[in-house]
Length: 227
Image 1 (cartoon, rainbow, N blue to C red):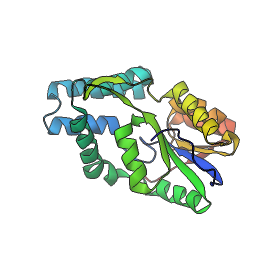
Image 2 (tube, one colour):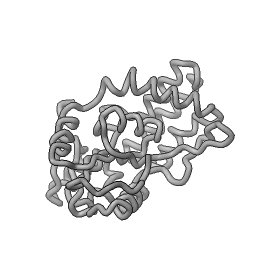
Image 3 (cartoon, rainbow, N blue to C red):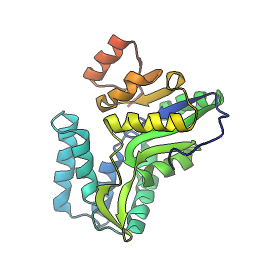
């Protein structure tokens, strides 16, 4: 799924992040762990992947660097095998950690005829299935590069993080006649600051201290769920 033109029969649009927002997990990390269980990733590679994520959470590594590390282990994997791994990870891990309070929030928007779009740095193979599972409308996400049926370990284009995320959102809104000033965004990360600053209705989900301070200063909605 991508920024394809749709009939403008929605009242407004809600964009929602995936990791630690809709799902109480980081999909890339869970993919790596599941790949290890299935023998698709060497156990010796896991600490490096997890350490990269920890560095990112501590502000010691940028989001793009972290994403490249999380995606790098897929290099050489047949896309078909990766696709099956994503499906298995969703069904056996991620769906058990859906934030039901967020789902309820989105349900209220849907009753008000809102379009719901997943806006995430996670892989297309994850995001597209989440969209289908919950009956959402579209996904804007990272597409992993595939050559001759195998993943290269890199993104096709840029990872959907930070400034790239707001660029993709603007392009999507322009293509679909959507007013950003009337749109909503649910996210949890300080890396989403470009989106929070531009969207009409920002909602910070279980924000850390830094994002909480910014939310209070800018009068952004803070949503704390039970996890």
